[in-house]
Image 1 (cartoon, each protein chain N blue to C red):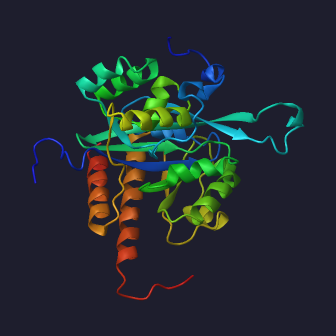
Image 2: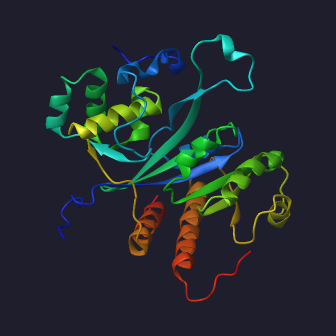
Image 3: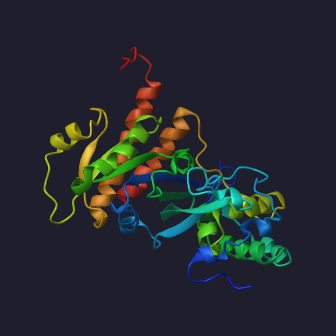
Length: 121
Length: 202
């Protein structure tokens, strides 16, 4: 099945059918949380269904956030979140931390890195 | 610690800055000015009971609405990505904002000086959040130039919230705005942890 084209809202008939009706992900994944897929995981995902295979492919070439996965697949965010959480559980995707730093030093280090990244723009 | 490539244990870290403001104020333009990708749209489906709108009682199931959020990306290093998320234009979807601001570095409230009242709702929202934010006046052509102090007074922006001029179309102006957000966040963090002197209560 090709991804829907034109107005994506046209594809929102029973959007949670692809998750078999589940609307709660097996783990919380932040919008900006980054995911990657190894070459082996992509090969495995080939037999995991269209959506999972597509998502694994998207995350193989470069790390992608949940928001990007939802945008590229044109899946509603909640649907993408359920599928991605499942894929993390199945070992098809690696979930990287989304800035959960709590300690002062860690938070300051992140801000400093973001700052120098912006200055290099 | 092994510094070859990215640290496997820490993985790839992402950070986000939220761009808020009224409908049509230039949020997506601002994101596009610095993003390495053409701004993308992610859509969230909202299921509402249809309260307040028409008579949905005869319709089986619930009403579904779509909320769109535009965002961009700046890959800063092999292990660091910054995302810029624009808030949904419709202010009735406040609860989506909660997800957007959770864990964010900080926020920009973009203001169009021709429609200054559009900024009231976003400003109210951020005053109640524990998130560093600043106010940026988007300088549209043909817009009357306001004195910054004039705008601060009109919008009742607290003195500790930075207020600056920007141009959402220009990369260098947006870059400066984002730098200011991060510097403001660093000051806020230092204050939060610098508990040497008693914090004055407003």
